[in-house]
Image (cartoon, rainbow, N blue to C red; front, side):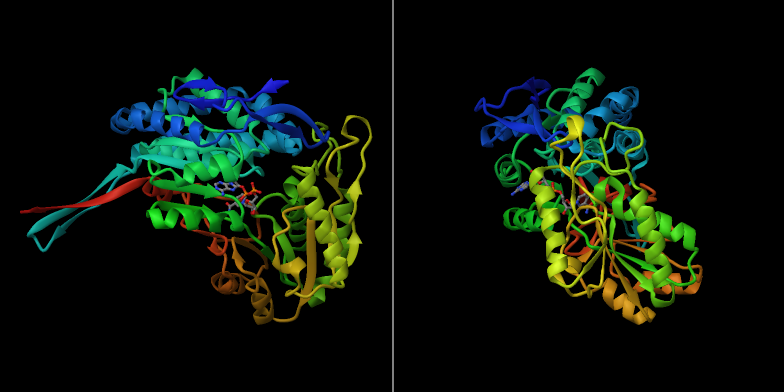
Length: 480
Ligand code: NAD
């Protein structure tokens, strides 16, 4: 069976304990590789390597740093098919999606921050003609980057690329559920000639390997993407050590459809934004609110399009909804369908596990599920499910729907559908979400700040915000 290895000090190494965890192919429900069960000793080795390589990497001319990172992007492009296949097998997503979205975005992340670092500048101010104050930004040191399983290489590179571009060295941990593409990435780093110790990848469990990174006194900055509960634990550990923290957490995103919307576009994109990647994208809209006069027509068309989605083998070209990432996650998602029924919800379509035949007979598939008849306060509408489940509710007024949208503890993203420009801007300003899409979904300019409000996160990633996060600002004042 294939063994994934840690990448420490420029080499692929076994975990110190020699212990491994099973890595599942979720479409087949069976173990297909082994992932290191790393612990404190592995993290200590990784941090030591990152500390030793820091000075040389931080002071290297930025063009040279940038060239190495761009070389890695080129290698991702070269290996697009191989990486997409690996990600599909590891995570359960349709290979078509991995090829069109996840892997190209991983290479864009590397290229965007590699080139951004060349243009990164800091400010200078002449103060009353008496002094010049300038801001000196220096890389913060060893950065800890921890990423989740839903967009494995996409989110892994979204964290490490700005850290490396800013001149930090990195100790990173991908999710133990989807380690394969980060492993392949470590091989690309070696091929690209990334100096040893600049990036170190430690695989393993969150509470063990992940926690060891957070606790390590030699890691002054933590960039984390994952669940809100984990984010709270990380903040509790890191805050008393005064570490810099960026937390990108869960969501329960509203999708608001006004009666004057461009109907075809609204309903088609809403089906995508509900079920893309099996609903396992933090930015998926999981609560759809439709203005009452359009409600029946919208539900009918939405259900029709949902029923056309092919749930199947992620490796098949026609598949639109693949496997959920793990059996535990599938059971969690199914338990929310039961909860929705107990709360008085009507399952309009879906609601069951899908049993496929052939090599996917034991895979973790769930029907795209549409639920109506719930109120906004019930648990189904308050808690993040992170699967192919969406609820639809009618509303009467703008104030009412803004109240619904803002009624959860989350505030990650929101989508609005209306042809009324004034209304769109007014509602966008009042919905408490870090990102608002108007008449579209999932478009993002990487230069914009990205992040959540309320319990969806702290800090902003993307653009200069990310490069600033990985540096420390010092003000230098010179008397004229
Ligand atoms: P998770 O919180 O369980 O795990 C995320 C990562 O943290 C994994 O690598 C895990 O091993 C690690 N981890 C777990 N416990 C840890 C600890 N005590 N210390 C350090 N690391 C620890 O999340 P998940 O289930 O992998 O991902 C799904 C969640 O991620 C959802 O809530 C989703 O909304 C969220 N997410 C948010 C964004 C965003 O940008 N806001 C993007 C994608 C996913």
